[in-house]
Length: 449
View 1 (cartoon, rainbow, N blue to C red):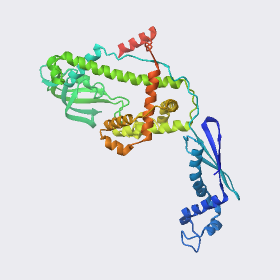
View 2 (view 1 turned 135 degrees about the vertical axis):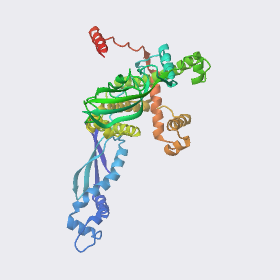
View 3 (view 1 turned 90 degrees about the horizontal axis):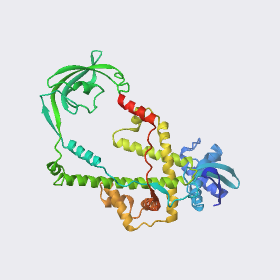
View 4 (view 1 turned 60 degrees about the horizontal axis):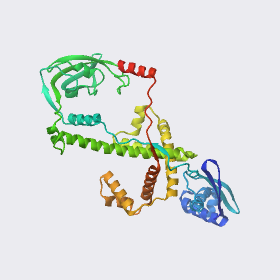
């Protein structure tokens, strides 16, 4: 097989291929066998029309498309391998000639772009130490208090924000009860904002056993067309008021909610766990920023086909995550007022970043060639098994004992770790203070809220 390539702009490559008359005739016979059940000639049963008669009755050209595809299915992969092409698009065929000498055709593809690496060792990257404030520890203790709070019925005062009230309610629009506007024995936490604006605020201040009417206005973006922006009244009756009783922060609390005997020990553990999490987040952030800095030192002309493929993959991934949460992508698009085209267009900037990062990491990996040991491989299998909550043996059955894909993933991770180890840590820039006028406007807005 003879094949040549021509490299064009924007990572486009044209592969020129040809087949002899004998090879083409053999492919025509294969095409005939594949399609013979579609040919009908008077006097012959379907599938029994001889090859020569098909060519006479329909014309030989009826077999050309499948014949050329048959040839290309063999020649194209061989040409890709011969010229070591890293194809990133679907092949586009163009037949140049079919004559007594055989067939000549071209296949256009896009390949991974060629580019030069910039500086990738010693880039400066902001890095913050793992610091946890006393306030953060106190906030976590407060969350623990709330998680362990109990409800105690009160009858000597009106309901207030933070209370849970047990109510019956029924809503009316223009004096007529509307669908979905009625509930009995409903537990509503005042201040949770789980009802439409104004409802919970008007329940507060009323006492157990009271029956009263409140007036509200439905939001303009409410999901029901009939109720959007509509005025409504609700008849409400309070059956019970339950106050949230938060446990005291003392040694007994520490014993009840943890394995520690004292509050100080609990606080110390909270700080330790938070510092570990912050350190982990900072490390991941530092690695991401290192990759970004390294990528900024490279100029790559990325083929559109690579961006499109990444966008499609990202869209599929997001659709799958939504489905796991019980939300269809179509429903999400309808809710956000987007078309699929809008949705994918919004993914393009991140797709471009991901493709560029992948190309840069791949090229640096080729240069430094990090080793993947058996220990590395087994640790990765265990990590995957843990994340999915399955046995390691199940992962091995699915991925295999010697997966090149998994090894490439480990090499890429090691490359990122290498880049981070060579990066120069610098102090993060302080957040810019807003201009005096801007700060004043923000203060005014906050006051109005």
